[in-house]
Image (cartoon, rainbow, N blue to C red; front, side, top):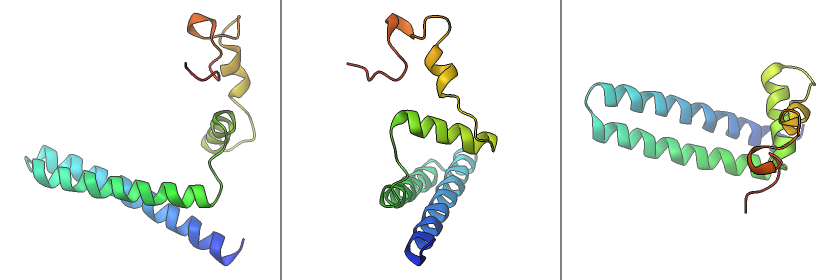
Length: 107
């Protein structure tokens, strides 16, 4: 991996961790009755999410929905399997509600 790509992955990872940490801090502040501090944590967390998303876009990690779904499943299970086909099958008909494919954009 190039130095730039490494730096972008590190930025993404750091932003994702910071966003999660801040969301948990917000929950705790809310539990303790600090509504305004909780709101502040959530705003900063959202900012971190925006920065992380920017790094993903620059890394060209955002693909089609089908590719994103397959990649998410692969990463989650640690394998090379795909959940796209079972989801696409949608039972016997291969269609979701109204006969629409789960991968067909809504009108």
